[in-house]
Image (cartoon, rainbow, N blue to C red; front, side, top):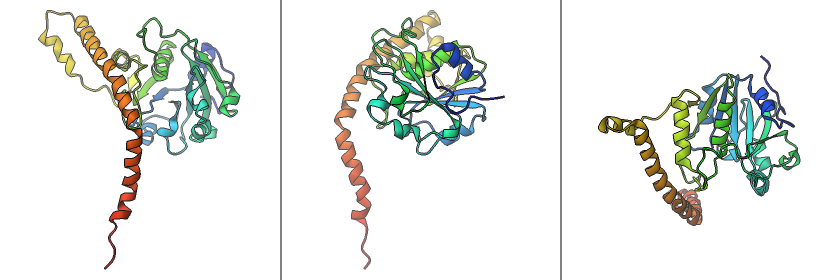
Length: 276
């Protein structure tokens, strides 16, 4: 079977064109920017007929050029894509093998987001997909969906023969990755796990066990839907309140953590024993 080659994303603009591009692959693996992703193990788990989709600032999870078939999703923002206005395009593109890199998929999910031209990506082949309002009917109105969530939902709705796989979609924050409060991470996790349980996509490594499943046996008089919605409401409320505060703390301690890491790197020199 012939697979799309380097530059295949150039000038693609319609859902039908993108569907045709994705159709030959056996697996479409969406790779989250997460500390939990082990690129070497992930690539080894899937055949050469798989396409790996990365998102935005991949230089935080890739430390050398990725050798598999790859595509980069670059999310539009009101000021343009973040890798463009941060001037990180060159740093990102060098981490893909030119002979297996299909190109960039520049997407937008809101009318206020501005798509970027090919020139903004230093001439890299670029296509566009306008998903304005795509998640509006189901996503919490006061939040905006992440690129990964939107792409997972969109790919499932295309009813491709390829197996859609999510890797690293845990929504866990770390010192490197912020879980910004503009997204509803709880809603996304619930939605994606339900998709996995319904067999519409696959979570790489499988679904984690749920202690909440035992609640149904404790409250047999309640329908499962009531239990599930109550869990979601409580968790969403608590996490939404804490996300903003934690992100503020992470931002406030950036300098302290950078200073600590600097002195930790110097520490061995200070402790090096002199020969008698």
